[in-house]
Length: 418
Image (cartoon, rainbow, N blue to C red):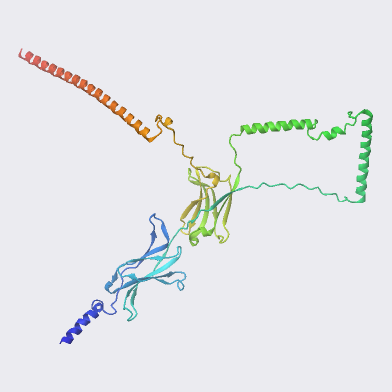
């Protein structure tokens, strides 16, 4: 009898779980799981994390832990992932995923047999989810202002005549040279005969001195023109008030490595946006394919996108869902800085007298306070006197009006008796 009692007690303590949840007791999910996106404290969507949530189960007392299994829908064989064990009282689990990639999730509820046999599992239904994320810049794009190169004209080279170098051409050159020498010798003889100052040949010296083809006065007129140009230049310098900036070429460049998740990227748009009229006066779209190693580079003339405080230089990043993120590509010359703060005024300018130290300032403050208190006392006395005079006048008028009414009543009663 004693042995039977001991066996019963051992059966209750050793098989405590089986007394509540019988072997291979069925349990299953009552609802489908769901997947949600997560957000940070500022309200921005997390780019690589989602939350899987599941509901109630039938015969929940037999469940010891949960697990979440998921895989990419386009590559299920190579991307299957099983999470670690989740406490039986939890109803959600955060999973790391790649954005803009569709995943399939399911939840497993298991009963732990502690190694005696394979754990009994119940699976939820499958649910698919894709994290629609809009990519953004992790660092600012590069903006440079480049000088525009001016085209230089090459000097024109004269070609030699085909006959140059022949004996015939050389003979012609020698003959013409002999004729010039003969004319020069005759001119030299005439100069010796009539003097060096005489100008017998009208086509000699004058012809060489008149080097201006547009003036009959030669170098004299050319000097006057130079003086005139210098005067015009001085007048132009005096008339200029503001220095005109030379146009430059604005080069905006960035790399795909600066985008956090290029798989979610659709295209870029460079905008010069008018804040007053809410429209773009300049826009350029950069579509796929994007270079992987080389930077994306766009050159824009500064006259096309001038500096204006009412305009914004915006670079838009569009995702696959049509949503966008923005960064600025403001050129350096268009950055408006606030003026430096003004210097502290001297005590003379602020009206503090000759006070230079803290003690002097406190003393002057006490003097001003004493003056204010004295004025308050004087004005309070004047106010009391005005109030007393007003009340006396008011009561006198009131007494006279009451006496007048009383006399009027007496006169009225006397006339009634008569």
